[in-house]
Figure 1 (cartoon, rainbow, N blue to C red):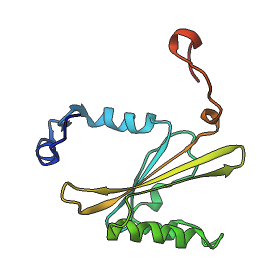
Figure 2 (cartoon, rainbow, N blue to C red):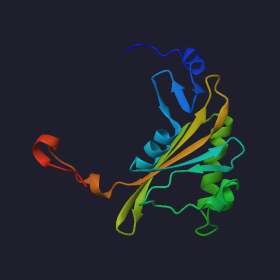
Figure 3 (tube, rainbow, N blue to C red):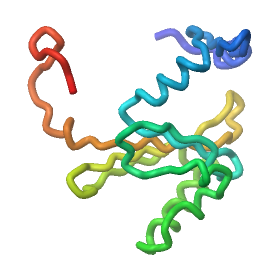
Figure 4 (cartoon, helix red, strand yellow):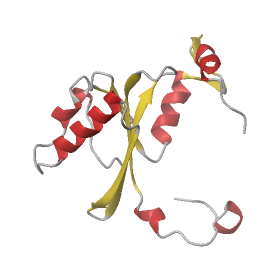
Length: 158
C-alpha cells in the first residue's frame, strides 16, 4: 500500500475561482455543499475552542440543529438531563484536546430508530488539534442486512 505524504497533500489543497482543489480532485463550493447534505448521515463540526461551527442540513436528522446554535460552546448545546450526557461530552473533548484519544463510537435505540454516533478528532499534519466531527445516523435499516444486494438484483434503493 502506498504511504501518503501528508505534508505534500496539505500543500496542494487550495481555493481557486470558486473551486476547492484537493490532492485527489477538485469541486466547486456548490457541489461540495450538496455532497455534504446528500450523505445519509449528519455531520456536525466543532472547532478547537469547542464551539459549534457547522452542521449538515439533511432532511432526516437524528438531532435537530439550528443556525442560532452556531458559535456556542458544545457543552451548552447538550441537555443537563440525563446527568451523564454533559460529563461524557466533556470527557470526549478533553481526550481529543490532550491527544489521548482520536475516536469514540456509540449506538443506542432512539424510538423506532437506532442512533449511531462517531466522534472524530480532527488534527492537522503536525498533530495539532483543530476540532472534532460528530457523525450521526440511523442504522436501523442496515442492522439486519444479510446476503448480497446489488443494482443488478434489487432495483432502485430508497
